[in-house]
Image 1 (cartoon, rainbow, N blue to C red):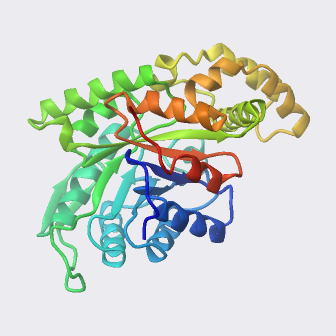
Image 2 (cartoon, helix red, strand yellow):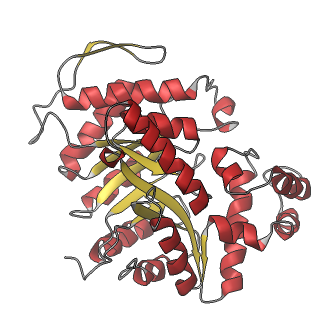
Length: 347
């Protein structure tokens, strides 16, 4: 089935830049080329993650499929566990990666969600979901999760319990990374960060794992990398700048990853001043793009020619935090990106 693939584990992440029918074809192609993972994000309110991820599992055989990521505010712990259980029944063992993340404001507040104590909320959901997938009756008396003798039904499963679904955390801040090292099966690292950030991120994961009496090697580590690839270097950089703008415009804040990666709040403020709010018209967007330095986006994305992108991914893989780079294509040439990494190796 696999045409031959890279020696390095690789993944893809999809948002909603292409039709679902196109994405299904891309996922099938990526599997044939030896990619190990595919993730679907819930970016803004474009698409939910569950529906496409289930579709990916139905048209492929072996590639791991991941929710990258869903939030615990609009789905309770029992429903999340039920969803992962059903996905595992359909996809088969060792394929489903259930990513949970803390969501973001102002989107959450705009739909009536109070994201108080997100670290605590994530911890309670990961612990309780993992317990439900492991089988047996689960009682959990938390601030955000309350379960009283709850259990999943496994009669329809060929495997389990325990189910082989992995519960990941979409972690960015160092405190969340420490908690991820303590209690999660895996970490889905965020994009728009540098290899320098990765070094600090790995230390945080390791600290959390040691605190829980386990090894950091027990935590699977995938990392999202924005990928803008084009034979024309300038076109690739322009695409990376636009993504940076569209990512920050609805939420102009600077987290741990942004600070360590050298993203100055002043740059974000200047960009927002030119933009004049979001959504914006094309003229305002073009003005805002002009104030984003080229070196900023080349430091926090995988962008440029195919050779540039290879070299950049290699820098991330050299850090212990990035076991499996997950490319998030933002240019339209997804098959070309897959082809460019089909024989990717890190020396």
